[in-house]
Length: 207
Image (cartoon, rainbow, N blue to C red):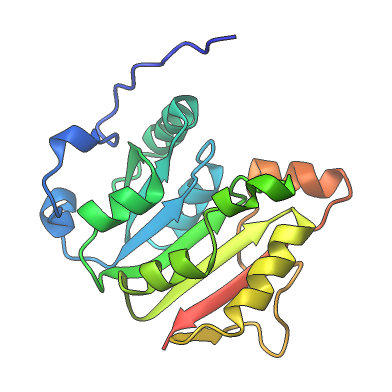
């Protein structure tokens, strides 16, 4: 069944075709505050709370799903938050074309598609190549957070990150945690927890 494409009318929604390459985000937000990125904003509950915790940061929330972007914009608009912008876009291309290298102070990746079938796991977003790529766009001391409810994905990323140069584990000596202090749970995380699943939280910092 084909889903209806929702036209998004929000001052906080940006269309990729309207942006230069790369973007002067300081000019777009009207300040030079630190820049943070959420990959996979879902319905926007996480980013609204997190952006509220950091009013002195600028946040970019991206998702490939039109309805999720629409719901995220509605939440941001209701909260009257001026420090979040939303785009419907694929992560890797957007970062490469629109994010200046060394500019991100934080990256949040919450419950990306786990591609559970073994033959499809090469399609997973978070792997060694992606993290090496992402490292170039993070500022020194920047944090990256990864969260998943899928056991195999969580264990795979946790193991992979131990051998990554340029990153420092912020939950050491653990490789991951099932709870992370002050980290907001999204609607989907709460749903998974209610079903008896565990969330794997992984937190690293660029050295």
